[in-house]
Length: 576
Image: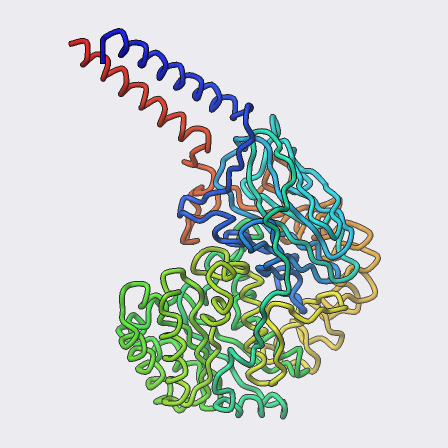
């Protein structure tokens, strides 16, 4: 190339780079481009529908039936998968996504498609956030575009019904992302149902091996549930939907062994079912063996007629153990439990981790072998996650390894079928017509005649005849005339005038005088949301979600600047 031709070429390239930089700095105003939400761990909302969304719970103790459920559905605009949110009566169906984009969106237009089972109002961002917006959903797909320019956003992107559902209501969201200018609605790639479904009867193996527990429940005989597991059973990440605001005590109420105890007490009308959960004390089955966890943790709590739930082995496989080694380690733990004289054992696993998807068939076969060889029961959670394929497996997961709060509660609900035999479909879950209620608590702790946390004659969280967890004559958790946790006429935990998870006048996760987070008075973090969210493993606060995130515009700008420097360097070398 001649020197003149080279110079002309270089000037054209520099002009192109400058133009691209200007477009990047202006958010690409000349062309609308959809930008998917991308996690630092590699997942997007399109590739992992529902992942890093968490369901919001309105009480420090679980309510039954489950307030809010999330499901993947093939009723979608793009990609064949969308997120369906099921709000039970009294619920606002709030879901929260940890977006990692700091205090502003760039590009600034939040865009999504949505529809609902009936005409409803959907709020995007919580009511205290400057960017909060209410849109009107119908039964048909619509594209919504919310311009957040100059408006503060939250570190959690939330969707919720503007008012508590008077009847079971569902809404579906899809193609959630950002655009520099609003593109027109496009339903050319839309897909429809019905969704493939599966009965819990296909997930429960060997139920007859724990029939003694079903008999105890029917005969109203006391027993303990003692559980041993890893971070799943500990409840890591489970409070994402509540802004990581839960104390250890609240998490202990929501992990699935505890919820199972609550459900059995409610289903059988018998308070003497207690739970001792040792979730998170060990990481792998190998750890439990080397640390003699069965003897040191479980043995002091167990009697021969009790029930053990075991949830270990997933991390062994993730760390590289073979299927054969996984099986051997689980069998060793089962043998140690049986040596204590305990034969009622349920293995619950394995929760979804994408790296295990290719081994799902071998895991299923191994679980079937454990049932036959060890005479235990199994709840096959790998099959639950993957029976429709990996793309449909994330809806009730907080991250790639751990269920969110509603995911824990649904695992507990599936476990109840081992004893009752009353199976149900896991996608098109049977609807409910009653408002969710919290548990009155187990009876054995105080030996009260009637269930209640103090065993008082009048059931309720204080045993009195006034406000309590059974929604008495005065204010209570069933959304009576006075404040209640389902958003009655006065403020409640579904985002009433005075936010608070128990509808208290003083906002905060317990509605108490001392609010959690900053109590809703300042900025983005109210209703007990934690302004310093935990790191990806959920272990400790570290601001993982608001610090270090790179703008979708910043990355191409940095690349173009580097290209410009390289071209300038090449030109200088050419001149030499």
